[in-house]
Amino acid sequence: MPTRKQRRRKAKTFRHEFGFVTYDEDGNEVEVDPTELRAAKAKEAPKSKGAKGVKGKGRASRPPREVKPPSWRRSLRRGLPMGAVMLVVVLLLFKNSPIQNRILTGLIYAAAFVPFTYWLDRFAYRNYLRKQGKS
Image (cartoon, rainbow, N blue to C red; front, side, top):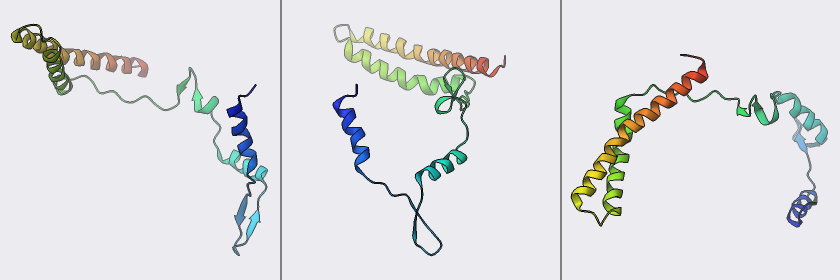
């Protein structure tokens, strides 16, 4: 049973009278039957393979985004800013420990971000190659 909100929305669509018109070469309005418009749209629209352009296992029909091979330069470019943020977070959160320990802990976390981002890039690249059927 539809809710009151759903009934109101459906009733709202029936309140307006839509006129489907086109203009001829003289500039006069000519009424068009809505069934003709639907038939014309059906001819123009390409047939999709499944519901809403989805085929196979529920995946979109577009090709997957190309993943670049992993590189240490890109890992440094991504990991160092995150490491700097982590250093600041450690300095702000661990106020009870001495400053040397906080800095050392923050630097260890910052240094760990670079190989971690390389590992993530490598994982994504190997997964991409596996899906493409390459070795």
